Length: 150
Image 1: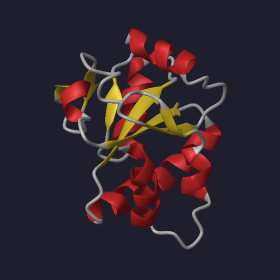
Image 2: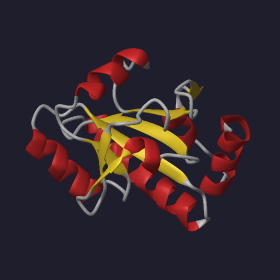
Image 3: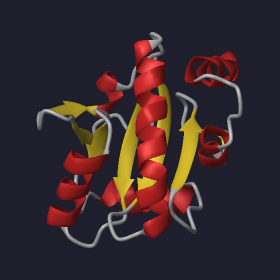
């Protein structure tokens, strides 16, 4: 994914901006398509945040990129700041959002896709895997994904 998003600016949790290509290099990347107005997203986001924090605490180099379907920048930023993990997001209005929606055939939200460095899909429905991981820890699930990502 680092190759595919090279040149795109990501916003980090502290408000700073970084080049996605550099920031995502050698990381396991998940694209999180979501929006503040979406009730299923509001239910899934806390699960993803917990998963992300657990994976990072276990030393996993995973990065979630929030790809917002919000209709206003204020809604995106508020939803991100109040409910999301310390991952990054693509700025409101960036043309890359529409490209990603089309390329990864995102028809409904929330949608979570784990993407290989070259931009191909590794896990089409990572949302279900995170939601229904049973007795697997976040670390174990990330290790399964990593085995096929690099």
